[in-house]
Image 1 (cartoon, rainbow, N blue to C red):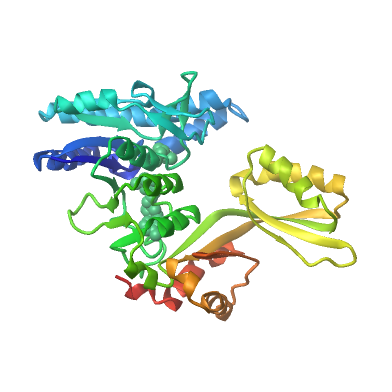
Image 2 (tube, rainbow, N blue to C red):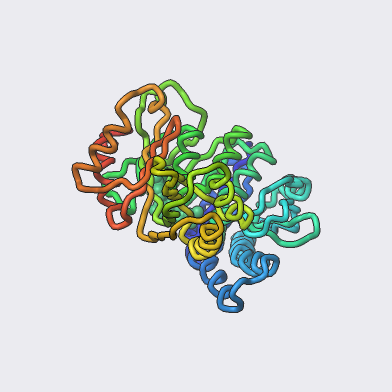
Length: 406
Ligand code: ADP
Ligand code: ASP
Ligand code: MG
């Protein structure tokens, strides 16, 4: 008898009929003799709806109340699933974050899990009860409800799997695995049988929504076997696991895109010590993450500085940078909110030459202009015009032969 954690995403619990299907998937594991802990998301679209409600109530909703509100979607689905399971004769009990408790820090909207008390869960499991836990939420030391960032139920699931030392963590979504690229924008995308933690982490960070980046970080740290699966078949799926010899041979394993990007250029900045610090410190002080940064070569003591932020932070970032630009004597600032980031990812990249050149040539052949470039050992990212996103993904998918991957 093994302990298995199953997580079901929003599309799979979107209505009562779908919740009944999820119940069957849980019962299937139970009948195979496994102990099951289930993590659920809110019904598809519900978290968006709650966020819109909060934003219609105030320009800047208070963070504590915001988290309290947007965490309610999960309360609905976990209690519904527990009701359905009980009705079918399988004892089940739902838990919210604070009832466990699943302790986090106090960074509302993007709280980090610090500790999970597994006592209550273990007690129920011992009695044969199916435990259903609300994803995406926790509680801080002052008993305030916190949320873990969009897509955070993945992290709840992996964290619980780690805390309970589960045999595996199955992530059920509207896709039956991790693909070479988003199958919803590229019909040549191929499902991967397995992917390394490091590649999956880069894919998640650079835009593949299928797993929240923190869930992958946690899986790697605690060595959790994560399967991304489909509820429609018991076959297939992708195992996220440690790197092995086969993976090292692959130069590029996946392509990602992120349309949630905006670019800011500070024009004609005096080129002297302290300028970058003056520009970026107030941004980080306001919790705005800066992604790529490039600084042009200096000409007669002046330079241009370009960087990207998330689209949702653009207005606030612009206000802050405008004020700093005046202080440091820059000419003006320019904003472009029509950009996207395209990335290629692969652990084998580090030991192969010519990968970047191939990426740039393939984009150039299609007339796609590259505005910014950044690289790491296992990733190359380019900022391009957003309207070319799908074209770029498909061109790179062809160029690196990913449709032949298995
Ligand atoms: P859930 O609600 O189940 O958590 P998400 O919407 O968060 O589901 O994540 C699943 C989505 O991730 C898919 O619908 C797909 O469009 C997107 N996606 C992006 N890149 C990939 C990829 N490489 N492989 C699989 N899915 C991907
Ligand atoms: N319901 C939350 C969201 O939409 C958490 C999740 O689905 O993982 O972001
Ligand atoms: Mg998700």
